[in-house]
Image (cartoon, rainbow, N blue to C red; front, side, top):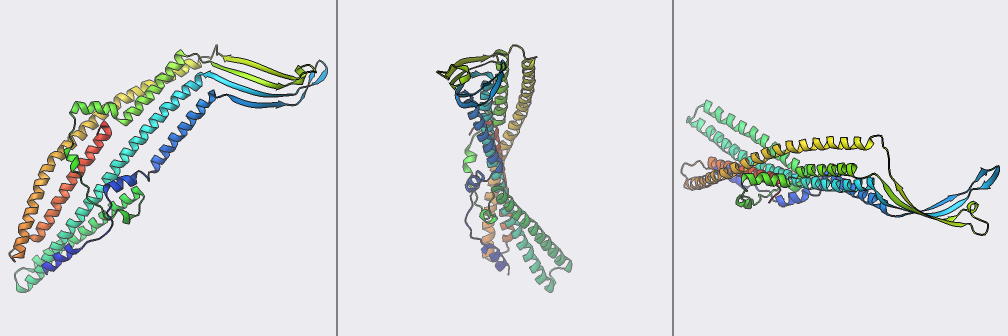
Length: 409
């Protein structure tokens, strides 16, 4: 009976198309509504930049008027038809907006890049959680099988008087608890698959048969020294870059408002007809002008704008200083985690080797009809595989999170 139950549990195998970690990461780049909105924002900023620059492109207009006016007790015609060509050579406002749109685009593009990297780590975490749920499901299945076997044996031994009815009730209770645990783990297994499928916007059947990724390359990676990690983080952290870009944009505005005169220079060329201004023999006329507008008094508007910008600048500088301290702490914490999981990996490898060897010897004893704890050995090997995988996945996630901060591969 024992052999039949063990064989039945080992025979179970579901054939489905493998869904790899690479497949999950690739799918994650397509279904993000947040990133779609971020791309739309970038597109909109580029559109604003384009139309802001077009203010320097000459404009051609047709101006028409038909009317009469009272002039020195006489009612005279007031008609004209002109083609008017206008061109702006320089505008301080346009120049400021040009720098602002340029910085906005860079900030939003860096934000998009950061979001893509964060989404990659998120999908890796969900993928690993699903794999760990598979290990847990297999382990609880094996434990339930062993509890069921012991309950069956207890029923057999009770009739011969080898065990008491109390012992039989104990084995039955253990089996029922194992069955309840299996139902709980099965629900968790389904939940992890659902979370992964929802995140990727894929049918759940597409993410059922997950394949263990080859993560050996991660163990060969070497971390820079602690101080070097801090330097890399301050240099490459995307959020810090965004804040520095915002600070640069404010500095450019302050410089412009402080040092540049708020003036506009342009030209106007008109050609057309206006009979009332010409003699009877020729009613065509043209005009050509160069225009310059310079404000002489703005009631302190410029100074107020500069003061407001300086306040914003100070706030951003304080935010940068605060963020650097937090960034340094985050780098340090993740560095410790990476080192911890890497050191634990050696212990988990040793435990895995031990459990594999123990299972082989238990299997030999079982095949020779000797007393054997084959079922327990199988379950404990699965548990060792679960703990090894969990440590490896934690290491990879910690390493990827550290890369997000320092920006170096």
